[in-house]
Image 1 (cartoon, rainbow, N blue to C red):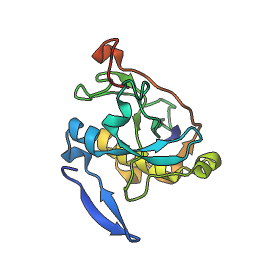
Image 2 (cartoon, rainbow, N blue to C red; image 1 turned 120 degrees about the vertical axis):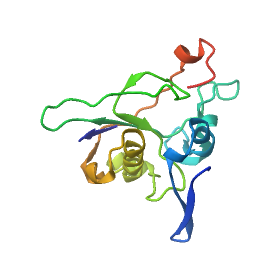
Image 3 (tube, rainbow, N blue to C red; image 1 turned 45 degrees about the horizontal axis):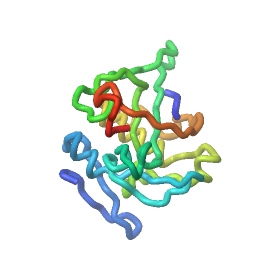
Length: 178
């Protein structure tokens, strides 16, 4: 989406609502799969609820391709060379471990500060500040890139798409994960 450049969570009050200070370094992959709540969408890109990361990625008779939810991908380029920063996913990842991928991908989450929820109008306008906030959070968590090195206003929204993918390499042809 972009180019350009809870065990241990704490709740804080912001504008009368509870927001979460997320600390991915204090959680295991299992914790994140259960405690992180993704934005569940209808077919028109409206946020209609939430689901655990685990629940949203399970393939079963009821949700044969998982639950439709918002995600993002970051493609970070070196401004001086144009090189794209790729990463190899950690071997401890539950889905797609050891796979070479784009710079960073993950999910905007409910209840975060700064907020990570965008409206369909935000997506249509290309502003998507919520997804950009989520990207900044995950770039720090996964790659140790501090927020001041990836300012939200330097991200460029490219597009949106619907897709699903099963992790058949890790879990076999009958993979429960997507």
